[in-house]
Amino acid sequence: MLIAAESNPVVAEIADGAMLPMETFCLLPHAIRSIDGSMSGAVDAALEASGRRRRVALALPQFHAVALAVASGPYIAAVPLQFATAVRRDLKLRLFRPPLDVPVPDVRLYWHSRHEQDAVHRWMRGTIVNAVQDLGWPDMCPA
Image 1 (cartoon, rainbow, N blue to C red):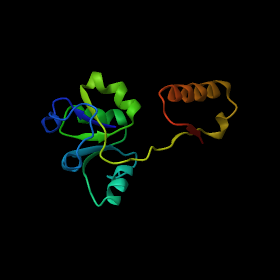
Image 2: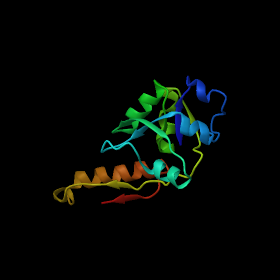
Image 3: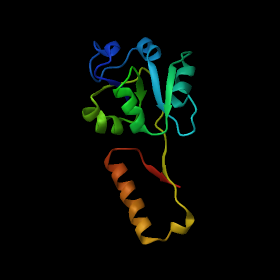
């Protein structure tokens, strides 16, 4: 799902939930979540297949930081639907469908082997898996 600030004039005339036109998608500056600081991701790979490029202007390590930047600036961002739905009202964001198919990433849990049999840790992992599944995320892959 794509997010943009309600105040972003470039998307003002586009209906909520509509597909963002490819030209607008490529024109606007993008904020991305990047845990390693790289300025590209799955969206860029999908765009390359169609011979297009986007302008990635900002990379941040968490989706919430990306959403805050979008809410207060000219950026758009591709984020998981579940996350976009959860923060849209508080951050005054609008949601749009991307003009291309973007693969859904795997969601994984990682933990140190010393915690494998720890009852509290097992409870926490189970709670996380259940919460993510309740959000409608695809199957979580434990590491």
